[in-house]
Length: 115
Length: 111
Image (cartoon, rainbow over all chains, first blue to last red; front, top):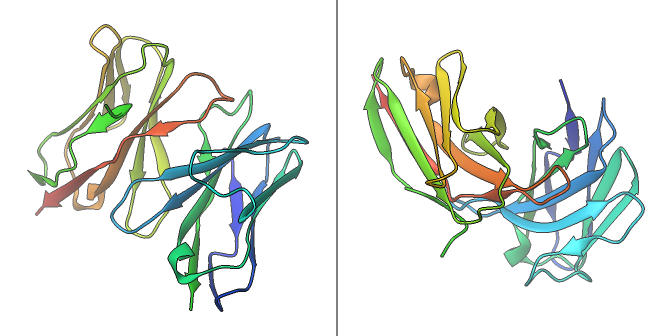
Protein backbone atom coordinates (compact mmCIF):
# COMPACT_ATOMS: atom_id res chain seq x y z
CA UNK A 1 0.00 0.00 0.00
CA UNK A 2 0.88 3.68 -0.23
CA UNK A 3 3.43 4.80 2.33
CA UNK A 4 4.33 8.34 3.36
CA UNK A 5 7.41 8.86 5.47
CA UNK A 6 7.68 11.96 7.63
CA UNK A 7 10.78 13.10 9.51
CA UNK A 8 11.61 13.93 12.17
CA UNK A 9 8.96 12.35 14.38
CA UNK A 10 9.70 14.85 17.08
CA UNK A 11 11.89 17.90 17.49
CA UNK A 12 12.67 20.37 20.23
CA UNK A 13 14.09 23.71 19.19
CA UNK A 14 14.90 27.03 20.72
CA UNK A 15 12.70 30.05 20.13
CA UNK A 16 13.85 32.00 17.08
CA UNK A 17 15.37 29.07 15.22
CA UNK A 18 14.01 27.34 12.14
CA UNK A 19 12.92 23.74 11.78
CA UNK A 20 12.50 21.72 8.59
CA UNK A 21 10.10 18.80 8.34
CA UNK A 22 10.29 16.36 5.43
CA UNK A 23 7.50 14.37 3.88
CA UNK A 24 8.26 11.66 1.33
CA UNK A 25 5.99 9.37 -0.64
CA UNK A 26 7.91 6.10 -0.78
CA UNK A 27 6.08 4.02 -3.34
CA UNK A 28 4.01 6.42 -5.38
CA UNK A 29 4.27 9.82 -6.99
CA UNK A 30 2.44 12.42 -4.97
CA UNK A 31 1.00 15.05 -7.25
CA UNK A 32 -0.45 16.87 -4.29
CA UNK A 33 0.74 17.13 -0.71
CA UNK A 34 -1.07 18.69 2.20
CA UNK A 35 0.27 20.04 5.46
CA UNK A 36 -1.81 20.03 8.62
CA UNK A 37 -1.38 21.25 12.14
CA UNK A 38 -3.16 19.77 15.13
CA UNK A 39 -3.30 21.23 18.60
CA UNK A 40 -4.19 19.00 21.58
CA UNK A 41 -7.78 17.77 21.58
CA UNK A 42 -8.51 19.59 18.34
CA UNK A 43 -9.05 18.37 14.81
CA UNK A 44 -6.63 18.65 11.93
CA UNK A 45 -6.29 22.14 10.51
CA UNK A 46 -5.16 22.38 6.92
CA UNK A 47 -2.28 24.82 6.54
CA UNK A 48 -1.46 24.57 2.86
CA UNK A 49 -1.73 22.51 -0.30
CA UNK A 50 1.28 22.02 -2.52
CA UNK A 51 1.59 20.69 -6.03
CA UNK A 52 4.90 19.57 -7.46
CA UNK A 53 6.78 22.40 -9.12
CA UNK A 54 4.40 25.18 -8.16
CA UNK A 55 3.88 27.50 -5.23
CA UNK A 56 1.88 26.25 -2.30
CA UNK A 57 -1.64 27.48 -1.67
CA UNK A 58 -2.01 28.60 1.91
CA UNK A 59 -5.21 28.58 3.93
CA UNK A 60 -6.54 31.81 5.31
CA UNK A 61 -4.68 32.91 8.40
CA UNK A 62 -1.55 30.85 7.70
CA UNK A 63 1.55 33.01 7.22
CA UNK A 64 3.33 31.88 4.08
CA UNK A 65 6.55 33.63 5.06
CA UNK A 66 6.63 31.80 8.34
CA UNK A 67 5.68 28.37 7.08
CA UNK A 68 7.75 27.78 3.97
CA UNK A 69 6.64 24.88 1.82
CA UNK A 70 8.68 23.37 -0.98
CA UNK A 71 7.44 20.58 -3.23
CA UNK A 72 10.41 20.17 -5.53
CA UNK A 73 9.72 16.63 -6.69
CA UNK A 74 6.86 14.19 -6.95
CA UNK A 75 8.08 12.36 -3.86
CA UNK A 76 9.24 15.08 -1.51
CA UNK A 77 7.70 18.08 0.18
CA UNK A 78 9.20 20.07 3.02
CA UNK A 79 7.74 22.42 5.59
CA UNK A 80 10.08 24.88 7.26
CA UNK A 81 8.87 26.68 10.35
CA UNK A 82 10.93 29.86 10.42
CA UNK A 83 11.71 31.85 13.55
CA UNK A 84 9.75 29.40 15.64
CA UNK A 85 7.99 30.56 18.79
CA UNK A 86 6.39 28.57 21.61
CA UNK A 87 2.93 29.10 20.10
CA UNK A 88 4.13 27.16 17.04
CA UNK A 89 4.46 24.07 19.20
CA UNK A 90 2.07 21.57 17.71
CA UNK A 91 1.69 18.28 15.88
CA UNK A 92 2.42 18.75 12.18
CA UNK A 93 1.18 16.11 9.75
CA UNK A 94 1.59 15.78 6.01
CA UNK A 95 -0.53 13.78 3.63
CA UNK A 96 -0.10 12.92 0.01
CA UNK A 97 -2.38 11.99 -2.82
CA UNK A 98 -2.04 11.05 -6.44
CA UNK A 99 -4.34 10.21 -9.28
CA UNK A 100 -4.01 6.52 -8.43
CA UNK A 101 -3.73 6.81 -4.64
CA UNK A 102 -7.03 8.29 -3.70
CA UNK A 103 -6.86 7.63 0.01
CA UNK A 104 -4.80 10.61 1.13
CA UNK A 105 -2.09 8.71 2.95
CA UNK A 106 -0.79 10.46 6.04
CA UNK A 107 2.73 10.69 7.34
CA UNK A 108 3.37 9.70 10.94
CA UNK A 109 3.47 13.32 12.09
CA UNK A 110 6.07 15.56 13.72
CA UNK A 111 5.73 16.76 17.28
CA UNK A 112 7.35 20.21 17.42
CA UNK A 113 8.15 21.77 20.78
CA UNK A 114 9.59 25.26 20.84
CA UNK A 115 11.24 26.26 24.11
CA UNK B 1 -22.05 26.33 9.37
CA UNK B 2 -19.17 23.90 9.48
CA UNK B 3 -18.57 21.99 6.29
CA UNK B 4 -18.31 18.62 8.01
CA UNK B 5 -20.03 18.11 11.33
CA UNK B 6 -19.61 15.35 13.86
CA UNK B 7 -20.72 14.86 17.43
CA UNK B 8 -17.58 15.28 19.53
CA UNK B 9 -18.61 12.62 22.01
CA UNK B 10 -17.29 10.90 23.93
CA UNK B 11 -19.36 7.98 22.75
CA UNK B 12 -19.16 5.08 25.17
CA UNK B 13 -20.04 1.62 23.91
CA UNK B 14 -19.74 -1.74 25.71
CA UNK B 15 -17.31 -4.27 24.29
CA UNK B 16 -18.95 -6.48 21.70
CA UNK B 17 -21.70 -4.00 20.87
CA UNK B 18 -22.14 -1.96 17.69
CA UNK B 19 -20.68 1.55 17.66
CA UNK B 20 -22.44 4.01 15.37
CA UNK B 21 -20.67 7.17 14.29
CA UNK B 22 -22.44 9.86 12.30
CA UNK B 23 -21.38 12.74 10.10
CA UNK B 24 -23.16 15.37 8.00
CA UNK B 25 -21.64 17.58 5.31
CA UNK B 26 -22.80 20.80 3.73
CA UNK B 27 -21.20 20.85 0.27
CA UNK B 28 -23.32 19.03 -2.28
CA UNK B 29 -20.42 18.80 -4.72
CA UNK B 30 -18.52 16.52 -2.37
CA UNK B 31 -17.69 13.32 -4.21
CA UNK B 32 -15.63 11.21 -1.86
CA UNK B 33 -16.01 10.41 1.78
CA UNK B 34 -13.57 8.94 4.24
CA UNK B 35 -13.43 7.68 7.78
CA UNK B 36 -10.11 7.94 9.59
CA UNK B 37 -9.14 6.59 12.99
CA UNK B 38 -6.70 8.57 15.10
CA UNK B 39 -5.11 7.33 18.29
CA UNK B 40 -3.84 9.92 20.72
CA UNK B 41 -0.51 11.35 19.59
CA UNK B 42 -0.62 9.52 16.26
CA UNK B 43 -1.53 10.56 12.76
CA UNK B 44 -4.84 9.50 11.21
CA UNK B 45 -5.14 6.17 9.43
CA UNK B 46 -7.69 5.50 6.74
CA UNK B 47 -10.36 2.97 7.67
CA UNK B 48 -12.94 3.31 4.94
CA UNK B 49 -13.61 5.29 1.81
CA UNK B 50 -16.99 5.46 0.10
CA UNK B 51 -17.99 7.17 -3.10
CA UNK B 52 -21.53 6.06 -3.95
CA UNK B 53 -24.81 5.83 -2.10
CA UNK B 54 -25.43 2.76 -0.03
CA UNK B 55 -23.38 0.56 2.25
CA UNK B 56 -19.79 -0.55 1.99
CA UNK B 57 -18.52 -3.28 4.27
CA UNK B 58 -14.94 -4.15 5.21
CA UNK B 59 -14.55 -6.62 8.03
CA UNK B 60 -16.16 -5.22 11.17
CA UNK B 61 -16.62 -1.81 9.57
CA UNK B 62 -19.54 -0.63 7.46
CA UNK B 63 -19.74 2.82 5.91
CA UNK B 64 -23.09 4.18 4.84
CA UNK B 65 -23.58 7.11 2.48
CA UNK B 66 -26.75 9.01 1.69
CA UNK B 67 -25.99 11.89 -0.66
CA UNK B 68 -29.58 13.14 -0.72
CA UNK B 69 -29.48 13.65 3.04
CA UNK B 70 -25.77 14.61 2.99
CA UNK B 71 -25.10 12.04 5.62
CA UNK B 72 -22.37 9.47 6.09
CA UNK B 73 -21.98 7.02 8.93
CA UNK B 74 -19.62 4.36 10.21
CA UNK B 75 -20.72 1.24 12.03
CA UNK B 76 -18.25 -0.84 14.01
CA UNK B 77 -19.50 -4.30 14.85
CA UNK B 78 -18.21 -6.39 17.74
CA UNK B 79 -16.47 -3.36 19.23
CA UNK B 80 -13.10 -4.02 20.84
CA UNK B 81 -11.15 -1.94 23.38
CA UNK B 82 -8.59 -1.33 20.62
CA UNK B 83 -11.28 0.55 18.70
CA UNK B 84 -11.16 3.30 21.33
CA UNK B 85 -9.91 6.33 19.41
CA UNK B 86 -11.05 9.50 17.73
CA UNK B 87 -12.82 8.93 14.43
CA UNK B 88 -12.59 11.64 11.80
CA UNK B 89 -15.07 12.01 8.99
CA UNK B 90 -13.72 13.69 5.86
CA UNK B 91 -14.86 14.67 2.41
CA UNK B 92 -13.31 15.95 -0.77
CA UNK B 93 -14.22 16.80 -4.33
CA UNK B 94 -11.33 15.18 -6.17
CA UNK B 95 -7.90 13.71 -5.56
CA UNK B 96 -6.34 17.14 -6.05
CA UNK B 97 -8.77 18.88 -3.74
CA UNK B 98 -8.14 19.56 -0.14
CA UNK B 99 -9.76 17.14 2.21
CA UNK B 100 -12.12 18.65 4.75
CA UNK B 101 -12.20 17.03 8.18
CA UNK B 102 -14.85 17.04 10.81
CA UNK B 103 -13.81 17.75 14.38
CA UNK B 104 -13.88 14.05 15.23
CA UNK B 105 -15.85 11.81 17.56
CA UNK B 106 -14.14 10.27 20.55
CA UNK B 107 -15.14 6.62 20.91
CA UNK B 108 -14.55 4.69 24.09
CA UNK B 109 -15.15 0.94 24.25
CA UNK B 110 -15.68 -0.16 27.82
CA UNK B 111 -14.77 -3.76 28.77
